[in-house]
Length: 138
Image 1 (tube, rainbow, N blue to C red):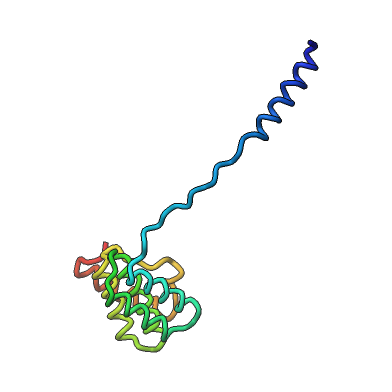
Image 2: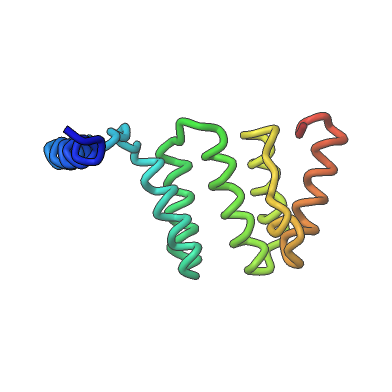
């Protein structure tokens, strides 16, 4: 058998064997079921992002009332409630919601774009500085 013929047979064999290999069916990763509070948090954030602030505020408050397992989730709910309050010219409530976010999660922070927002950015920075002086946020 010539080298060329041997290589061709080898190549054909590899192609045939490759065709026999069947990809296994991927198993979906099981996500643990979300609690009622977590579901309401997601719904509240979605409503906020769609500009439905009244619905968002209700869902976020309901999420907090139902109970959120993670302190970071509670802080996130308070963050969005602060955004809604600031956007409605309710600076006192905005400040209170940011304070609650820091109380839930001492490492709470806004990303650069959020912290630089002209409406709630100054309120957030004021609360953050106040909490720092009390030794709360890190």
